[in-house]
Length: 233
Image (cartoon, rainbow, N blue to C red; front, top):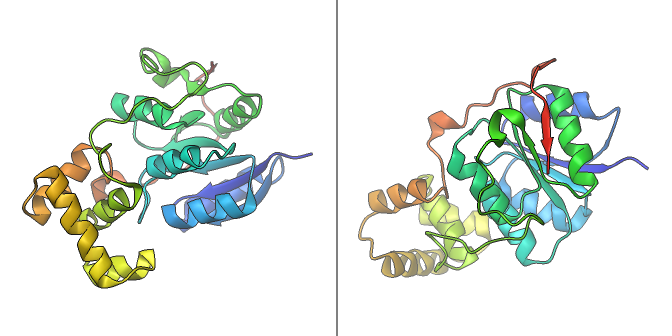
């Protein structure tokens, strides 16, 4: 039986490229263009593995990973991203990810990641591996979250949307809540964090990896070949 995979990225051409590259070896059960859609589809379709970028609209990939773990989901998460930042690698595994792969890797590296996490191991390419997993539980257990840990899941989601430049009406529509409820969440966020402006909220969200600068979300296609070996933990 083929491994069932859910793909998530906000760049349609990358999704189609991944589908064409992986479809012969794995079963692609669905695709998502934002974090909320990914969470909903993951809970509905129950794939074996979800492959997602970190930089996702509405809800970023790390937040989706954290929410799935909170809900007790057994879905394995592979982060496929251009972000090679040490802190992001560590945070991904703390949140419960099982693999971390860069978008400029070879297709075989991604396939190796899928095989490794299917067998219950963590996966990190050798180009990222050295020193990246310090402080991460060997079984992939989620460790305490820093920074925004005193915010509720809904407040983190609203914070990301505010930092993306969304107005309250847009946030309410995306989250299927009233405008007044969205505004109430924004007030609570600012009160908890002792922040007084949208600019400060945005800076906070970027600093704590809840949202990413647009210039950092450019996708790169997977390469056909690579000399980088895998690291399975």
